[in-house]
Image (cartoon, rainbow, N blue to C red):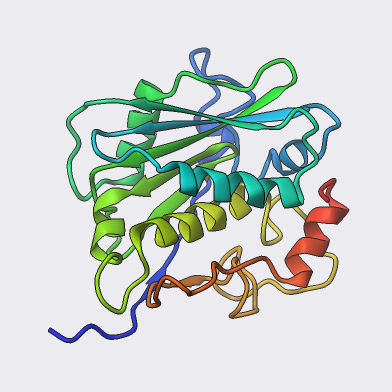
Length: 240
């Protein structure tokens, strides 16, 4: 079958603080999406970031992907202590497609690193499943949490006319990281209005934070970057 240009719509979710304020949940991490935007961007409280990746077998993120993500964060966040990654494999039965509740339950089971001291911790979970809404590649749902759906990534990458798997992972994770940074107008206020009618996304179709991600391309296709409006928002909220 001839492959046509494919667009994937990304949806973000917020889990309210009221629904997760329990004694067994770390209060600094299981909070509303965007609540830690300034903490991630500035060095006021946290001087470094540790990104913990919990992945199912065969879904370890390549070093080239992690290096790109680190460079992305270093361009926007003031973290003199640097950005570090840890990766841990886990084997648990999951259904596919997964619901948001199932994603949240799984994170509570596999996440081990939480924000404390001067280190802010972000958790990325990579699962061998699809999401309940078709064509969703990843979701952000708490202030330091996101999930990547490996089966969807495989479906929309690595074939003629599509981006490579690594290229798509980079674009997806950096987009979802933008939501953790409070974009657009969800924890990081806008300097000038540029929020689209499609949730917390940018109006510019060339911006990394546009509401759809382009999956077609080739090895020379550049990774989308934040436009001037999104960058100005981040600077105004403690970023570079």
